[in-house]
Length: 375
Image 1 (cartoon, rainbow, N blue to C red):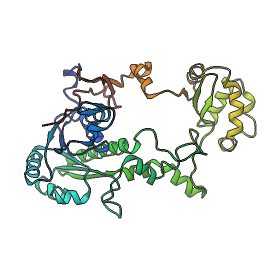
Image 2: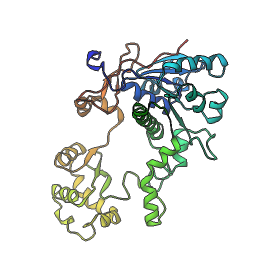
Image 3: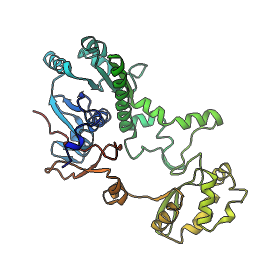
Image 4: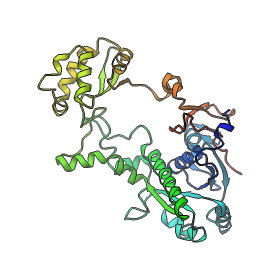
């Protein structure tokens, strides 16, 4: 159990949020606000949030549902009915933030547009997360993390050079858009503290994807060359990516000449430092395949753990390639206490990552498990 007295004054303590979002992106934004101390009430339709049935399941919850709905309570309201809409507006009377991920026409049909609600409550912060944004030719088109990874080019630059485009292995657009939603709400709260007025905060998976490929857009305009897939390597740095050792791969990231020199010295390959083919970052990127051969001549003599420790602790960014579940026994995860106790004795889920922020050395706790389906 967490120390309640220690966290009585979390940054958003006293803030009330109605979270009418579903699936992953919107609820993750609400979970961030909840982690930071807000009272977040999840508003579900009578059918329940679809993320409850995502696999693997845990009764009426799922792995995803546990993560994106921790620290919340839940109620069921039929927002398609006049009675449900009236009930929601009654709840909004003492609410600070209202979160939705409804398409524009659905907001209109349910009489829940920002204009309607903020006329009633000018200080309301209305946060809306959508697939493509609230305007434009695709504003009414539904979308999911993977489909928007395809549209914004993330898939195109993910995967091996000779393979097909692939989805990033984590839901980068869902989780990223949820973060932008929370960041926007926090900024709107600062503005409201100064002016007393609410704001409409909008973000989308599409805009998040466009932000994530910023480098590729800039690089194309500078070089005129189409974006390519580089696998675990990088088009801007070298050496960068996966390298073979005696018993598995390590990932090396060299971002400047100083680090490259340090790497070469630690590998006893000082000759590479002055080799014209590798003397600058630009030349190292151009000759990445040849440089890989030279580095792996040394790297294959020892195992991944040896190189991660030998190089990493002497200033070269390098680490082993691990599975996500390895974090459960990772000494660094234990040291920074990123994995927090999950307060639900009925679930097999015992630890989940908390919000990756600490305040004066303390991480906001998981105060309550994701709620069961409301009656």
